[in-house]
Length: 88
Image (tube, one colour):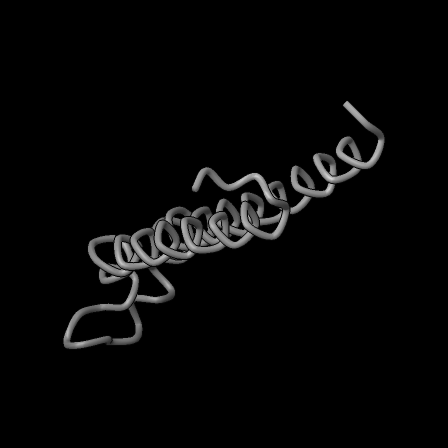
């Protein structure tokens, strides 16, 4: 492995780790922090007729997870092409 391809692999992996850190952070915020830890304070507010803490725990977190899946797939496809490691 040449030094330039080794540097490119390190840049690819660093970009991959940044995307993972962002997705996992958002997952933790919506899955645990808003849905569990701050559920009671958020229940003071209503969203579509439901208490906000309850809504995050039952539906909001799921919507965020689905959006994160599509974002991750799109971003990784971009990174694969940018670093020339794509399959097609």
